Image (cartoon, rainbow, N blue to C red; front, side, top):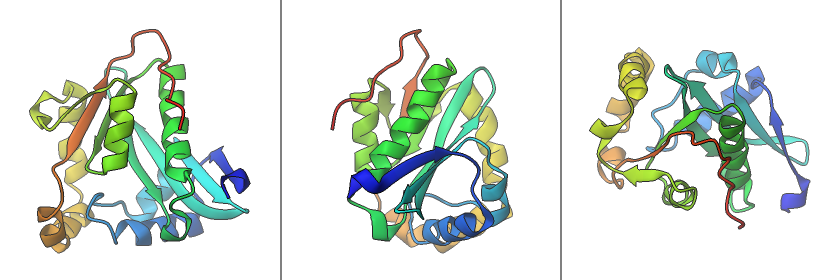
Length: 180
C-alpha cells in the first residue's frame, strides 16, 4: 500500500485545500486554517496515494531561524499506511537541510513519539517555547476563524490529552528519522 504513496514539496491546489480544510474541521487537535490560508502556504509536503490527494504537512518559518512544523493531517481514508510518518519526516529533513531550529506542538501520541525519537526536548510547559514562537502565536491565534473554531471545538478539546511541544535547536548534524 505505501509503495503507491508519493510525497511532493509544493503548494496545495485549491481543491486540496478545500479537502484539507474539511478534514481539519473534524479534529480537535488542530484549530484549523481557512482555505485561503492553506492555498497561500509555500512550505508544504503533499502526499498522493495512487495520484489522489491523501494528506499534507506544512511548516511555517518564524523569526530567529526557527521553523514550526505546524500541521500534519492525513485524510481518514488513507490513515494507517505510514503517510503521516513520511510527511513528518519530509518536513523534518527540510528543516535540517536549511539549518533551522524546529518547534512542534501536538497532542497526537504518534507525533509526540516521533519528537522523542528525534531527540527533541518534549514537555507540556508551553511557557518554555522559544521566543520566536511566543512572538508568532498571538498573531496566529488572532484569526477570527481560529477563535470561532476554538469555541466550536471546546468540549472536544477539553477531553483531549494536553498539548506537548517539541523543541530542537539546530546543532549542525542532521538528526535522522528512526527506522520504522
